[in-house]
Amino acid sequence: MGAVAELAERLRARAVSSRELVDASLRRAEATASLNAFVCLDPDGARAAAAQADDERARGIDRGPLHGVPVAIKDNLHVAGLPTTCASRILAGFVPRTDATAVGRLRAAGAIVMGKTNLDEFAMGSSTEHSAFGPVRNPVDEERVAGGSSGGSAAAVAAGVVPIALGSDTGGSVRQPAAFCGVVGLRPTWGSVSRSGLVAFASSLDQVGPIAADVESAQLVLEVLASPDPADATATRNLGPAAEPGRIGLITELADAVPPAGRSVLDRAVAALGGAEPVSLPSTRFAAPAYYVLASAEAASNLARFDGVRYGARVHGDSLAAMIRSTRTEGFGREVQRRVLLGNFVLSAGHRDAYYRRGLAARDRLRAEFDALFRRVDLLISLTAPETAFPVGSRPDPVAMYRSDLLTIPAALAGLPAVSVPVPGPGLPWGVQLMGPAGADRTVLAAARRLEAALR
Amino acid sequence: MSGVDPAVVARIAELAALDVPEADRAAVTAEFAAIVAWIDTLAELPDTPAPTPPPAGLALRPDVVTNAPGSDLLAVAPAVTVGRIVVPPVLED
Image 1 (spheres, each protein chain N blue to C red):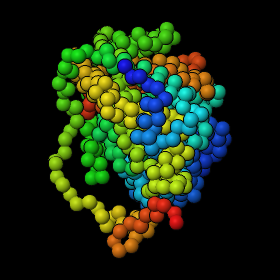
Image 2 (tube, chains in turn blue, purple; image 1 turned 45 degrees about the vertical axis):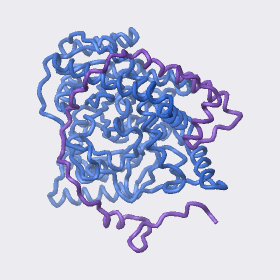
Image 3 (cartoon, rainbow over the protein chains, first blue to last red; image 1 turned 90 degrees about the vertical axis):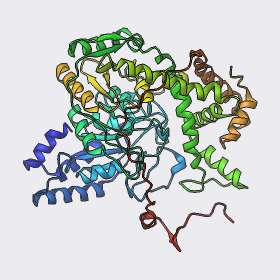
Image 4 (tube, chains in turn green, red; image 1 turned 180 degrees about the vertical axis):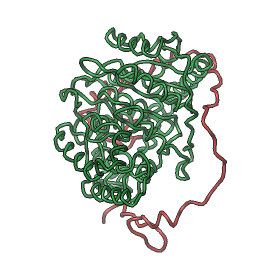
């Protein structure tokens, strides 16, 4: 559908109406239904909101660049009146009464919610194949995955259904699908965007972030989203000034982990930015195992609330304990069960020191190494994923899937802002990732815009 | 390090409030053992104390306690009685 700034210009000039944009978005969603990007669409709600946006504009009210622009929302964020499923059977029938704070801020800025996008169940996955609604297909090649867990949001943007969508990034779930689909994905500094109304997966890692056709659009969304929030004590607007980055570091451990085709993409991006100095982040070898220990431990705790009592589906049992077990066993899909088991294992007596505490120690070590690097360089660069989108159904081994997250996990563990920028070229899309210190989101985005322009 | 076997999986499943059917237990155990073998990489983490983590660089907010927005919650609850949210019965009759 294009860039937000361009749409905003056309809306302000009355060259197009919000109603027309919404109708175009709905037509495009229908034409690309085979992607399975959406869990639900809300044509009536979207048309009503578009009518209101057009009416406001006619009365001289301008809410900013998102006013009248269609957006899609990952289905682990609450939209009042629409089901929140998290792509799980266990939440069948659950309809939230209020918006997530991030969704409310988009609406207050005039954005129009088109619907909810498909995801890996409870955002646990890297391919959007672990969904109760079936896999999301990549718009570039429908035989391939869209990446995950925000695969529906990335596919919806890449297919031109919406110019922007919200995702959530726990270990790379905004950036990796954006890379696989050839669009921009931003993970803001942890805590800069409220998670109120985001169904929790791993609270020390979860972050809401935009997926967009270009860097400027992602930044426009971030500027709307970032804010303190009385409903989320961790939310603090903390984006920093838009400084022009000087020194860029190339993390050798991450560069060495990619195949030659990826390395040439990375080299092209480095050259486009005027070069980068090699730097070392030795603890990256522990990052993915530490992430799967910590995230699974937090997931085991967060998902304990899904017990058939308060939310969604319930499966009968002869006792309270039997009802809870039956509901969780039938309600959770296989990947979620795997991670809940792993989380309980690493927190259980006899294993806590070997796994959970060591996971925390690895995270501390990684954060300290990042901190030391950011005294030498302003930004770090790597590929976003060590591969392009793989065929649907081709990766049944969970450990192989987990290992593929190795490039996005370090920034997530350290709470850093990171953005994936698509690299144009023949074949399947690649993404290049820029990472900065916590609170340097605008600097990261300034470099991303420079990279985007240089690669065009 | 892990010693994952079917008995361990059964015990963890009980902690997780999940059923692992007998027929699936061998496959789940093998898959789980492979994951645990992978996270055993953490055993190679140096024993020297981890460097003191730097401040996360995140802005802090005042540590002020405020009252929960009770009336707002009740306004959006599906059902309310005598100032409380009505929830479904836990067990059917």
